[in-house]
Length: 144
Image 1 (tube, rainbow, N blue to C red):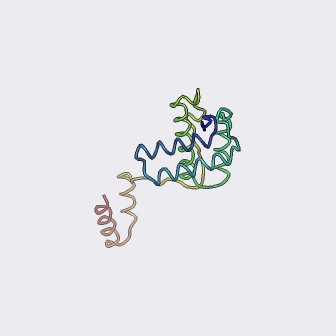
Image 2: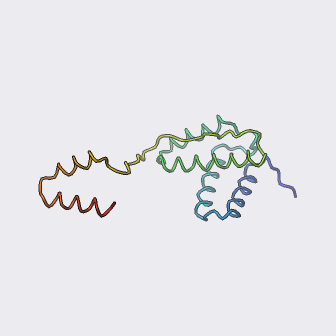
Image 3: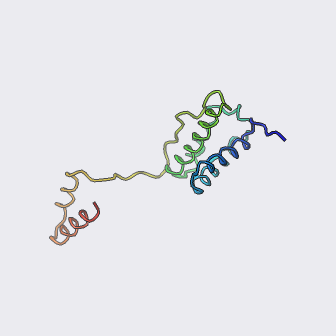
């Protein structure tokens, strides 16, 4: 039996198989599958030719309303974007409706990766005890 290339679930299976063949980590493939199955459940559409940018953006809005958190939403959006990019590269779609698709928002804020010299000086100057300052300097030097 020939599988219909227009069927979304057929293409998801093919995409996941290709990821495995390329040696992607099992966890990466599993996360991608979860994201794509959430997308399928949301769109309730089986014909990939009927999925347009508006549909994909609606999925992004749905994710934000679910309050999963920014990192989770970004991961789901990335999986969907990569999948549609793959469909385009394979010639299954004539254009990529998910190009530059990102999901902003959520409850997870990224912390700065480092403090500036001025911030370190202010932090060290704010300590009242010499032992606190010594501990702070020691911990700073030990971590980095």
